[in-house]
Amino acid sequence: MPKHHPSEEILMAYAAGSLPEALSLVVASHLTLCPACRAEVEAYEALGGSLMDALDPASLDESAFSSIMAEIDMLDSETEESAPWGGAMPLPRKPDMEDPSLPRPLRDYLQVDLTALQWRKVMRGVEDTEIELGPDGAKTRLMRIQPGVAVPKHTHHGQEVTLVLEGGYSDADGHYERGDVQIADPSVDHQPVADVGEPCICLVVSDAPMKMTGTFGRLLNPFVTY
Amino acid sequence: MAAMPKVSNGKADPGYLADLLVSVGRDRDRIAFAELFSYFGPRVKAYLMRQGAGEAQAEELVQEAMIMVWRRAESFDMSKSGASTWIFTIARNKRIDALRREKRPEYDPDDPALVPAAAEDADSLVEAAQQSERLSVAMKSLSSEQAELIRMAYFEDKAHGAIAEETELPLGTVKSRLRLALGHLRKALKEYQ
Ligand SMILES: [Zn+2]
Image 1 (cartoon, protein in one colour):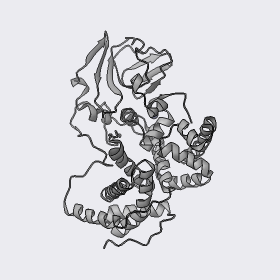
Image 2 (image 1 turned 120 degrees about the horizontal axis):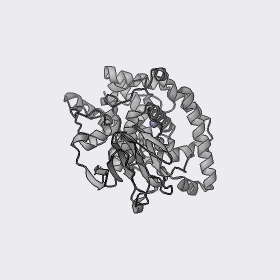
Image 3 (image 1 turned 90 degrees about the vertical axis):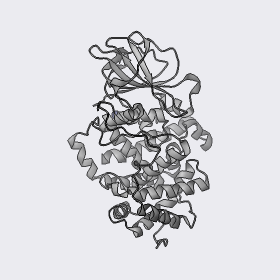
Image 4 (image 1 turned 135 degrees about the vertical axis):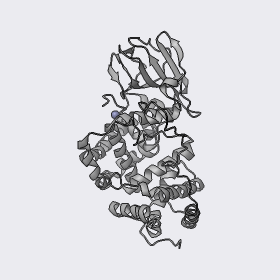
């Protein structure tokens, strides 16, 4: 089980639906590997349900119900392909990919197995490959760090969120393994060193310094707590 | 056939709402669906408008969400969540799709990579139905001001600074009141877990 989790504020924002897509990908991948956070998110969704319950009801158009029933009559007369749960723009799923070790939310974005990914060299012992997100997506990529390699301090000053997928690394804050999430504060000088043994593969979301939205900055600031 | 039901727009018993949803899923029960609609339709609309949808868009999204409720009702499991929670997540996903135009990555319970919960966590599921009740009791014990702060933080995605401005409270006060209110709710949830 992972030892390092997203903050409660991030989990609540994910449940509320206000977390940006890139961070939602980190959270959904972490949830695959972390039953404790799944329970947390369920609890925050229940909070959303009771908050919605407690809102003053807004009056609906009188024809609303009959148009729904008309639509339902139409749907029931067809045998439609069932839409994915919740209906938010689905990604085509590839159930036949060979490597089952990647959390499914991530596999849906990559569309290929880890072994088939095209890596780009960043520096000796460090490679990355970008993941395409929507237009406002923060920079999101997988990084592969060879055993024992130290990644130098980053040149940009944005926030960074890391989820370990394979292998592990250590820095001044601790040791991170599969499923662990680290939210790095740019003011802290952290230099991760990959564990010896196998390469470390991580999902990394970084915030471009000038693109920092209120939400993103707020959520990533480890000192902001309720 | 499509007559509006008589059901109250006011309070509803979580167990009763869950039963309605089960009837819709199991029997395609249209009377039960009409009751669900009269309770949740106006609330889903209020939620969407609170999140920035205009009148017409909210109306349209309510219809889409309720049609989704009809189509997905079979997958509702009352041992896992309450009806309000389940319908909230559908409305939330509709909102992300329509208002934010983003995808929402979600974990897949059938993913071979999924790490299952330890066995002793399983009994928490049995009590899931109680969760809504516990929460609404906890919500009612908050002051109206605390409840409003929570709604702002949860539904409007307001940074604490923006909440402070709007409520004309000092930032530190907003933070400490939110922390208290959330702590109170979390306690109700943790007891259940
Ligand atoms: Zn976790």
